[in-house]
Amino acid sequence: VQLQASGGGLVHAGGSLRLSCAASGRTFSSYDMGWFRQAPGKEREFVSYVDWRGGSTYYADSVKGRFTISRDNAKNTVDLQMNSLKPEDTAVYYCAATRTYYSGTYRTQEYEYDYWGQGTLVTVSS
Image 1 (tube, one colour):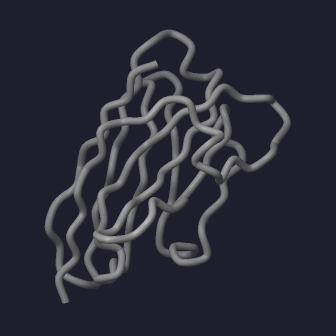
Image 2 (cartoon, rainbow, N blue to C red; image 1 turned 135 degrees about the horizontal axis):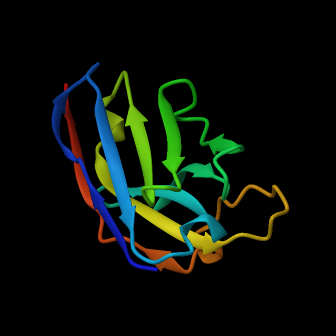
């Protein structure tokens, strides 16, 4: 599966952005999806997860209550709605896909994902 992330940009603190990830292929519903981010000078970190059907989600503590992940299997897309943005949310955001085990297990580690998008830059000014 090929992934294309979009929607990044420059926003003031407190503002909102919506990232989108478009996936190629006919088996999108067989994949769990995740969003990760990498801030300048830092390791890439987990942000959010959604299971193959969109019924189960999970968030990093740092974004819980501010970010919402969703997916549309008919359109092969997964979105990340980001509200109440903070300067520390500044990073390159990556969407990622991994074949589902249909187990409901949250996939939060980089090594669990097999496919990655190219990243989209989010900059939050103070």
